[in-house]
Amino acid sequence: MAIVTLLTDFGVGDAYVGMMKGVILSVNRDQLVCLDIRKPIISEKGELVGAIVSIDRFGNLITNIDLKRLEIFCKTDTGNRLLVWIGGERISGLSTCYGQAEPNCPLAIIGSLGYLEIAVNCGKARSYFKAEKGDIVRVMTTEP
Image 1 (cartoon, one colour):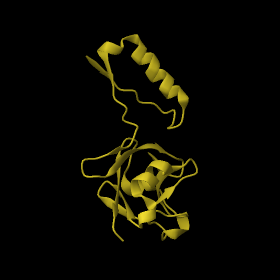
Image 2 (spheres, one colour; image 1 turned 180 degrees about the vertical axis):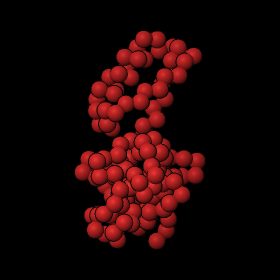
Image 3 (cartoon, helix red, strand yellow; image 1 turned 90 degrees about the vertical axis):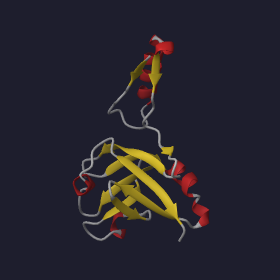
């Protein structure tokens, strides 16, 4: 049995990726295993685990964790506090604008495409965290 890894730069919302996976599996479905590593999961520790799937020209880290999945995970009506971990660094809370963080400080924000992004106000998150595509991002909640 072979494992096929499909790595693309088509983005998180492009239907072409799904079509390519379908074609690959149609070649010999019984002999291939397709692992979808682009979908966030809930870990054994109860964390929402995603990955950096893109880095924009400003150095912001775009994850594969969308707002809907984040809201369901956090159960926003309970008042739980959001914690985002990247590498060994923790970001507390979800900002609604970049200015909520001090200059050169990191923040977590929902970007214009509806995905969790990690940014640095007046800086580049890519450099700040020494991050690359594929790096793991963990989200957890804690009581207020």
